[in-house]
Image (cartoon, rainbow, N blue to C red; front, side):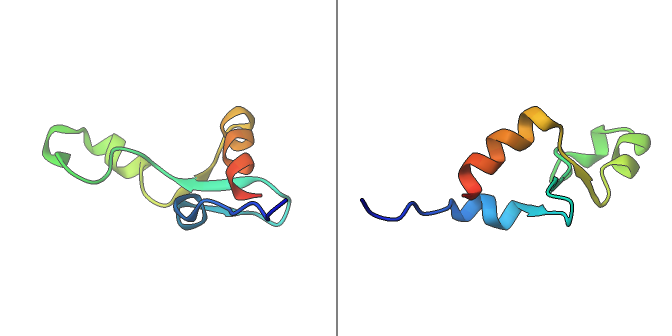
Amino acid sequence: MPKLKSKSAVKKRFKTTATGKIKGGYVAKRHLLINKPKKMKRKARGSHVLTTVVANIVKKFMH
């Protein structure tokens, strides 16, 4: 049976923390920012730790 490849898109978008949690960026920060509130744009800076449900889906593609 051949080796399973990890998804390139997942490797680029997510990182694993030292404790094994998955860290990713925020959504809705690319375009149409003039219509979005300042509070939302401030909150979308940087990155955050994903919830366990979403993290399990991402881990499946990371191998």
